[in-house]
Length: 336
DNA sequence: CAGCTTCTGGGAGCCCACCA
DNA sequence: TGGTGGGCTCCCAGAAGCTG
Image: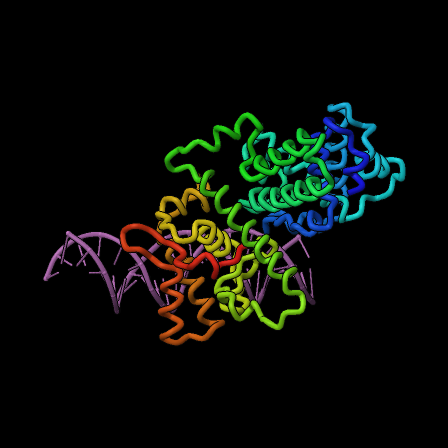
């Protein structure tokens, strides 16, 4: 709200909005999932500190490049740290990192794999983060609307709206119209729709909660129980029927990829191309082997009986001569 | 029923953490 | 620094299941 008052009409930039969102309570709460490979490096103090400086320097550079160094938001969040010369706290560092990542992402001049590799992120992490921030941008837009931006600051409002859309797909403004086009095999349209559905769900949930603050109704009973829960923040385990099942990084990658494409048959080639790099020798045997091991791990946790066996087999479904799919209704799957 | 696909268990080899 | 043990991935092979 403060920002809304002091930000100047017609002068807000994408970078500014991203930084604002990254420093908001919800923005801070959104995790950046690290890949296992880099997690150990992150523990090393020198490496860590070096990285912190890097993101901060990069932001500073971008701000000067845009000639926005006297904006109050930047003064508060970035410039002050320079004067103090203190070590950057973890919280700020993460916010800087998110801002840099998402800025790269929406700029679109680096492809997603490059950004993820350069920053040691788990595959798909940027998209998840982008979607989260897209939702935040929408919330910001709503607040701005309530603050009366419709009258007089329509242009700024639109800017946030466009940014929100770009965050979903990581495209430049001009690329948006292209991404809306229907291209066979392109999932952009579908993902925008999915995101809208999620947001509608959230809004509806919010309405229910605010309408019946003292209601005795337990919505939990009405809600279908989540069967599979995957958190990018915890790539070491999944939650199956409420039980934590420990998985290896390859197993997690496999199950995450299937979950992202819930209800779709992924061919063995799809899986091999995505999970194993070109120069690694891999065959479908590896996939079935890992699938078997995931099933075995799940069964070991939830109980190895005929009923469970059948159920797990039906969820991690092998479609003969076609491929593999995660056969689960949308409301029973949770990816965070 | 033959041939193909998938399941399953097990083992080799590699990597890494730990310890003396 | 080198030995050791545990964990992980990949591969193999036989059994079981499926398809045309």
